[in-house]
Length: 217
Image (cartoon, rainbow, N blue to C red; front, side):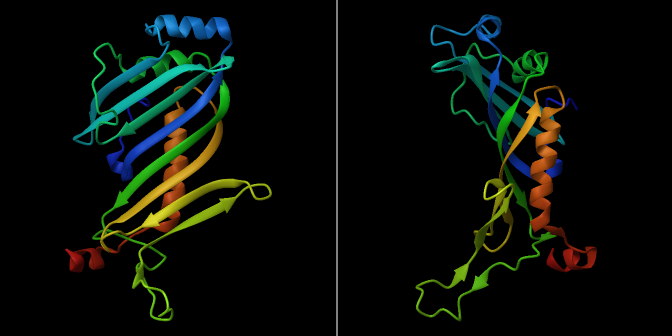
């Protein structure tokens, strides 16, 4: 499997998105726009699909010059198990073309990343018990707390990463992980982001023992 076509299924990821502004310079941005065959709006759109772990995966990306920042190219890339775009751009090219083009630049910048993960309760459990019953707070018009947000600070009060843990039907565990990471855009960048997001998620989920999994099935 190519580094640019990651297997989301084996990592319990259903959606993975990252975006950032790459400082390429006006002339290089002009070359990227021309190579990507952007239209008059100067917006590049990429769409593709592939199979991993026997499941369909979908990738989409948009790239365009940042308004009032002629030296910057904004890039937003999404991988998911369902089509991220609700339309098909007839002239869209594979996402790997954009990734390969940008990887040659090896430009370092700060990327904002989001991962959405899902863990079946039959084989996974949370170290934080959910739901939380509100029996000690009778004044609140609710019965349970089924989710929460946890935040890790970096220097001072700046957020290093955050995670929302949810159990909407009191069955599967749903995680949404958000973080920023400064990295050089190269062929390994997708693997770096996925490992970072999954490592945050794994702090709030544990594999069930085989005996417990068998009793739950």
